[in-house]
Image (cartoon, rainbow, N blue to C red):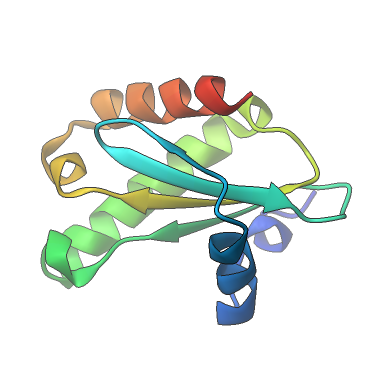
Length: 109
């Protein structure tokens, strides 16, 4: 599958997932999810301005995309997922962020 097809991009798609209110999380990440009626999974990342400047937010987003790409199989097909980063996630190393990501994926399985 093309990785460009697996990301949520439109605001309406984000709002549908938020409206469903299926939420789980850990100390660093909150995840919202809902069935999407497709055979594939789609993912979106939310990193608010409260977490830092543009450089900080983009670095975190790049790390998350790579972690998602490397751990693509941990999430079930047929769902939309939105990962919302918490303030504590800014200071994490790549390995710690990946560990937190894997933890939350196993939690919702």
